[in-house]
Image (cartoon, one colour):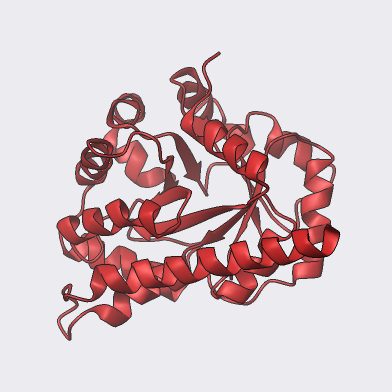
Length: 283
C-alpha cells in the first residue's frame, strides 16, 4: 500500500529525531484569500502538518479564540466548498505538506457525506479530525473515509482510560491526537509531566505517532511537549495572532500573514532548540 503524506511526513521527522509542528488555522479567516496566503506560508515558516478548521456556528469543543476565528470566517462568507477549494489551490504549489480538515460533523452532513469525501480526496485532503463523531459511529464517516485513502484521526483525552482506548484506536490512522487538558481549546496550559505519561500509555497500545494539542501557546510549551510527543499541535495562539493583526473592522492588514509566520517560526525554533539540547546532553 502506498504511504500517504501524513505517514511519509512523520516517518521523515522520526528519522531526523524531530517532532512535528502541526499548525491549526481556520479556513476563511479573516477572508478566503488571506487564509490561502497564510496556509501557503506555513510550510516555509516551519509547519510540518497543517490542520485546517472547517467553520461551524456551534463549535462546542473550541475556546474563544477558535470560536471567534470561525465567526470571522463565516461572516466573510466561508463555505465548505470554499474550504475544499482552498486546499485545491494550495495543492497547485505544494504536493507534499499534509493537510488535515478539523471540525464538526454537521457541516459535512449538510454538504453530503459521500460528496464531501469524494471532493476532499480530489482536492488533496489527507485526513479528517471530526471531534463529535465517536467510534460507535464509524460506519457514518470513518470507514468510508478510510476506503478513499483519507486518514481518520481520533482524539484521545485525559479521561480516555485503558478500557476505552482500544475502541478509540480501532480505525484511527495517520496519527493520534492527544488532548492535553480537560476542557475547551486554549483554556489552560498543559502539565508536561502528565502529558509525557499519557503519551507513553497511548504508545503501549499503538504504533501510530502521537501529537499533543490544546493549550500549547508558547515556544517553551511547544518545546516541552515536543520532548516526549511525536508532534505538537498549536491552534489558539495562531488564530489569535491573526485576530490581533486585523483592523478595527476585522479585515486583514499588511501584517496579518507576517504575524502568523513569525509565531510559527518561534514555535519551530523553540522545539528544535530543545531537541538539540536533549541530543547534546545524551551525546
